[in-house]
Length: 366
Ligand SMILES: Cc1ncc(C[n+]2csc(CCOP(=O)(O)OP(=O)(O)O)c2C)c(N)n1
Image (cartoon, rainbow, N blue to C red; front, side, top):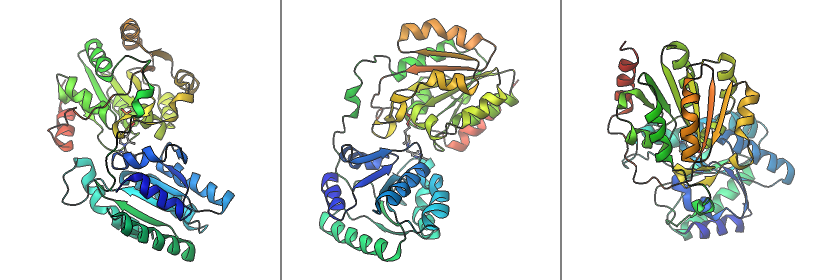
């Protein structure tokens, strides 16, 4: 069905406020709520809390949208906020890793358990129909259920439920020329021989995988969005003779921003934290993050990072890379890059477990 028709139906039943984190299966849905009352949250737990605040203020039921991998981030606010205060929420959950549908390894377990998790936390759920007429009766039933019980309800959304649309979020960023590929290739050129990389979820890991000559030096954090920097911190603390790079994205960084306080507190001088800031969630359709209003150099400086750099061209990147890498203090480098479709980027052929083994062997080689 067309996402616009589904959203019109939601509004017909008075579901007209949206809070969430974008998902690739919900690309068209996200595009069509762009001009509705919609807040893109830093993480899915925040989205639940935002929805609860809306309910407190208006007495109306919010729509909370997310990829199923975000369920883990919101179980606590579902159980200890929405549930105990009896605040009903309507969830729209993208079903990555649906059983018997080909997907990436990080989605299989989550996909298999999605409906079980929802059942387990007491959220009634139903697979959203591809057919608009059936979807209308489903929304009607969901509305009756949430109003009668005060409990939440979830629609689980299969791949292909919403027709593909050209989402065109990227066209707003014409002024930045530097690409993800150029930035990562340049970092790799400057990185010392004993470097190791921990990269974040999505296109950044896929680009590192494509550009790097030695994949055993890269830990590709294919799932677990927002946690690459914490992994890198522990590796850096335990392997002080190696240079550890974290390649972060703005969506991922913001999802668990508190991690930078922990990093600064420990301040390993061999950790090089790089933010590839494209101002959007590029990997799932380029929906905006709150990056535009954030001053990352000031935030990292305030958190306690010792050396701070920010660049937005290849020339400036080349100018700062040696200093950024060679200085002997905890360092942060923001690289502003242009959003760019990465559908043609290769996906790792090795399994996550094989990646882990190769990385550990290399890290402990000498
Ligand atoms: C907990 C969780 N929520 C949502 C997603 C879906 N997701 C995968 S990549 C991504 C966007 C990441 O954005 P950013 O870190 O800015 O990197 P970019 O894609 O722009 O390179 C999202 C939302 C996820 N994998 N995990």
